[in-house]
Image (cartoon, rainbow, N blue to C red; front, side):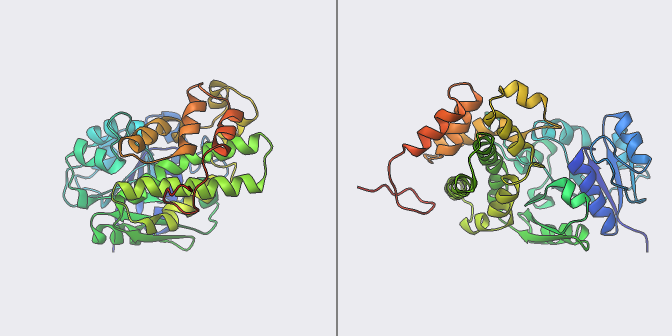
Length: 343
């Protein structure tokens, strides 16, 4: 019996890691990217640009030709995974023309579209004219290097269709990667987008030399404001107690492998945003996502003080020190994710 075929659009660290996950789950995988050098590296068995030292499975190949990746023999792939930054989702979706009913589409991106506040699933559905039940999103504590090293990890696959989520979970389940399923797409997507912003704040605090108490406080209160936003937009609050919520938040806020945490750390050390970005090995989604998350929260009357502080720092309206002082000076309230001020 021949293996089913998957396509991964994007040849960065996470795209390459996920291609490896799929290959180790038994699929043949074709990757697509625009860089001829990176594609050549992958075809030689190692993406030395983004995952040096990781030997890629022989079932993985790569090309710079989109049609060659998607339909080399005239047959559609079973799965197409989009592993590109949020800012590239629209253009790649339009270019790929993923209208075939027998192909499922999976987003690996975490972010919101500026100004429109569309989630990635909404962008894929609207720009690609794809039925939402054919689309899924994947999120969770998924630092790419650790998964590439085959360290045990879990994730959540969310779709409007539980059957779609279950099928994709089967395709990416291997001995070190365990996917769970969900139908709370909005909760999973908003958690993935907003936790990057909280990671910037926590990285900044640790760059200033602050310790575990501060980190735990910011994780807890960050989770509370993430949950408020999700619930206001129809998410299940239980999602935020799961892999896409607290799970992803802890990983992103606790590891130097996280680009968002690392950039925040450099800001806390006194670097400018430009200096910090120049040292980042890839796209830092929290920078572009912070303002849309805050604007979306404000549009529905949701209080997100940590996110507001991050936006102020990134826009140059406050220093990291001033952000911390502002958060500590806020009015007293009851503990929990809902806003309940004390008299």
